[in-house]
View 1 (cartoon, rainbow, N blue to C red):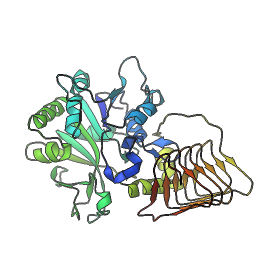
View 2 (cartoon, one colour):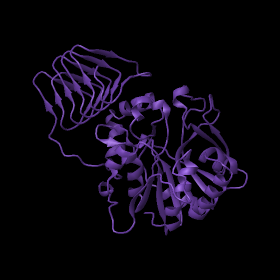
View 3 (tube, rainbow, N blue to C red):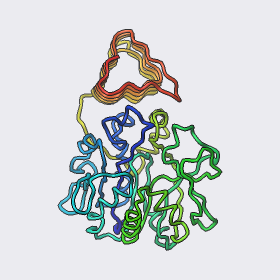
Length: 377
């Protein structure tokens, strides 16, 4: 268990490739797998590692995120000392009250960082889905004498995923001793197969110095300016993660991650391992399946009423699916009403959407149809 590190989660990513899904919410507040939010994974990984001080550096559209996190009780972070801290933008003598990038958010968080009594910072983003603890990564960081250690996973070297999937596609090149020798950002086609997972371990004093230096130079991008700009003078190491990784960097990636989680083996490895993924508990009645309804290979949350057919889909809380309606390969967020005899395939319905009788929405797995929050179709 890690006792000498605090956690800092940057929840200010602006991922335009998520389109309507992030118009009114932060990326970390995106619902996933029927009952979770994306940020649950970053928080749970830290708590499972023994970290008891975690700050969330938000930027905009964070109301939903703050409502979800509340006091941090669901992650055992509601404490008299330490616990969960929400660092929202504000303006004073030292802070501008805006964030043009991660460097600005870290600059605005320096008061919290300086007050922390731990020596190390585990810095992560909020849009990556995986399950692990950081004990072995911390041990490697200390033993190697690294200034910064980057968590990565391996992918096909020429994988690009298309333009829509290249938000913060950070590839790293490693020497035989594990030292990072080159960093590519959003490459069209990359020769490098190691992809950053947006998780970094860095000593507190080093982080403060580098953030102050970048800010003084008018630099705002953490990877480009702070990491790539210092490859020649810092010892930056890589540490490999071998399990599942989902990145919420586009609508297609968000859709694929939810569809991936329909696999029973992946569900067990991600949610039912020794390291649990925690979330805010919302008590609702069990889902109700009316006579002649059919459900197969789907996640159906509490509070749903199913009268039609659901196949290979993720259905969140409080959803109604009417008689004769068929929902296939789709993601339906909370409190959606789908009336009778509708047909939906490869569709993402945001919260509070209403689908009228006999509506037909057909998308493509690579380009799912997205209906914005509160719309009537």
